[in-house]
Length: 294
Image (cartoon, rainbow, N blue to C red; front, side, top):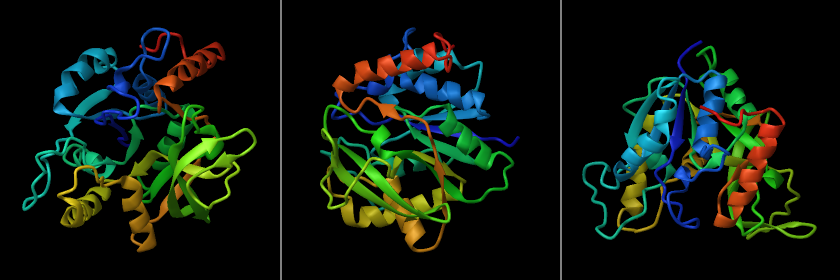
């Protein structure tokens, strides 16, 4: 088994939710969603986890999260810093928002030299999803990028609209990711800001990716190009789905679509939290997780 790293994006503040939601407990013994992801990663063959955090939250992370499993998996931190941008550019003084998921992943470039999975810190993906990525990269020979796709209908919130990257594939490889906004469950249908007709079976990206270190050179080049246009803006973001779309459209990379049967859930809105807690209790009752993870 070759080295395989889990990269957890946890630097975002969670603007819609209010507060650092990655540290919010959802399990019966104060487990966070991140704890469930790390537990699933360990039992599916990952042997290192890198947390992308902001410097001011690192000590909270170490106290509340990583201290629980420091003896079970190798742990490292990457710091996402607004001012960590290429020479020749300056971060606007008024900018508070991180530069986006592409920049977040780039912040880990110096500590990852092996295939790695990327996830959001506040999303629950399920063991099967980690298994798909672990098996895809297990022997170290697979050079393709990959993405775990979930069924749209299993990823919606009862409390408001969400954005999802809707995927089109051919021969098990993604040919397009279309970012679609304000997707909502209605009584008998699904609506969105797009003209697309949606029935809930569509494969969507939930920011669960598999990459090789080759990604970092693409991100470096692309981030400079992004800043050439957007460096003075306060809220524009360099986002990983856009980067991957560009690589696909220019035939630079192939991205394998790995379809997960797992239910995804996350705390997009504060009102989602009780649902997530009940889902986790159901999984514990069904024997998928112990009541105390670590």
